[in-house]
Length: 523
Image (tube, rainbow, N blue to C red):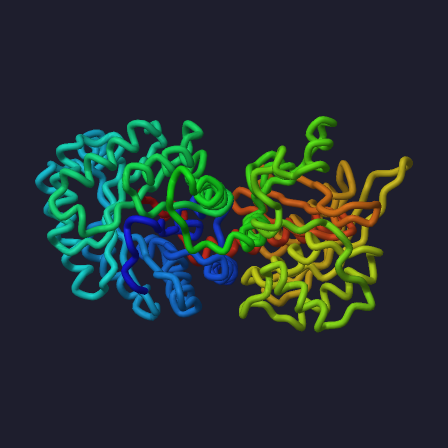
């Protein structure tokens, strides 16, 4: 990837697969990460941070597979300044077309004294060694000063100058705790760019968290202060209150180019598809009032607003829904539609990529079309998400039967395949879904598997009409691990059972690939 001018272009660094995955319950298996990575490439992001290679075997394997799967973006692994982390990260990205490393160490006195127990001199020495080691193998090396917004500015100037001398090509200034405010952020970037020796030779980057609701504001302020890379996630997912929202910051730059004077490479018509795919994969719903991708983002209820939009859209709309790829929720396909029309519609929605088994997806579409009179774009998003991000399954739902009446207790019989072994269990419950979940729990106990705690259960309709698909998400907890499962079906009981089994498979994957307590960390 060629060097990018620093005056009129902002690189989009997506960390959905690393920082975004740190949202509670948002852990993704390798297949799911590949589905997201391919969508990020279709979206046109410049950099994909695929994970933290040293954190677990699962992360290492996922980074290697993402690195091999995408061709255009730079693919990074996060790494601390420790030698084993650097070596592990280098091995993870070696198969990428455009490999790189993202090296970080904390720089605030709070972190130095209470977390690292290191002096400033030791931190500088560690950072310089790590950058020099990384540059021996890759051309793209980003250095992050963790907790930069609470660090001494003079020390920031010192350490950034030293890592630039050592070969860093990108200098990241993280607001790790979401502490900054936009005016201070812009001033900090201006000072660093003007005072750091060699600062004119690197790209300055902003990585902002949303603890005070100012991640997007701080990122845009950083651009005004000279930053030419923004680190963000789809739907703004991430640690605690989340990260800078990719869709919000990209559309702000595009819509208000008169203010910011910069462009991005993002294909904005792919934004909605990326948002919905991530929501399906993680089970984290998009709030209806979320800017750009929420259900109400382009909805008008007030009479005055409706009248104005009908007369002239710009009265109340500063963007077109088509600019972010939003479907119109009109009928697009039916049970008589053929494979060619199906694939063509997937392409138009930005849902078609190499990771899809088109045969399986088309079969799922035809099965849904037989159950529903109308198949909407949202239905296709749900189908593709299920087909392209299927879990590495220990558990499979084979069949279930259930019954409920005013005269008796609800009951269910469930047949599961557990590691290839078929098991049938009967159970009763307070309701039909409770009975189904009790039967699944009984099947787990019969093979000695732990029954996790159901922390959350949510259900909503994702398309219109009495034959709408119901979308169920449930969050399961097992010790220190949490996993979200999600499924969509016209039968809400089946969707509930499938969502529970999907979460079970994620927990199984976590047990095998990410031991408890080995969660990623970073800027």
